[in-house]
Image 1 (spheres, one colour):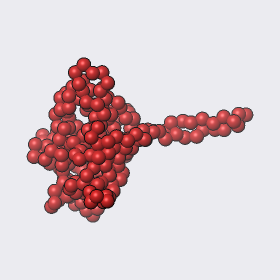
Image 2 (cartoon, rainbow, N blue to C red):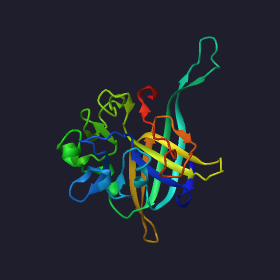
Image 3 (cartoon, helix red, strand yellow):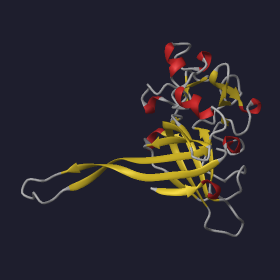
Image 4 (cartoon, helix red, strand yellow):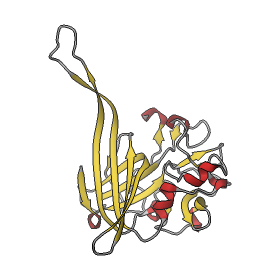
Length: 252
């Protein structure tokens, strides 16, 4: 596990889809006091209080503000194999999957992540419709397409390989993508790095009150897809600052 101070890194959160659904308006996930989590066109959403679609020109709007710290844990889950007949002293490890956990700690100034984790979700924008689950489930799993042109907020009950960016798509839009800017692009510098965590879901959310009266919240994201250290070729909000290539089904 590696810990970064919030002032030393930048974090941008996007969906895993860059497709323009719902009549051509690319959708972002936002929260309001009436409906809870819902979908809204990116041009109508407020930067810093939204999760935009995965595109270099809009990702900056998904900046996670007021960060105080970031825990980054990169690991794998292994299966023990052995001992073997005639060689009882030999044990091996076989890799099953990657395990990447990112915990963001920020000063809490709104209920954005509260609603994303706990709900409710606007029934018209929920994959199940206006069901009881829409009231108790948040937007932990990102987007899911109900047909070839309509994006909904997913419920996490579909097999990951069935959550395509479009109907019968070869790309997966399950979860969220975290763009962790460890060192931003500077012309002439070759040590820049953006750590990209793909297809991550929200697996935890806690709120704490510090002794100095500051309320902080921690949001945990977990991914089993191999992360990618990305070398940027441009500044943030320009083409090439992070990896916006959709996750191919063949990677899963």
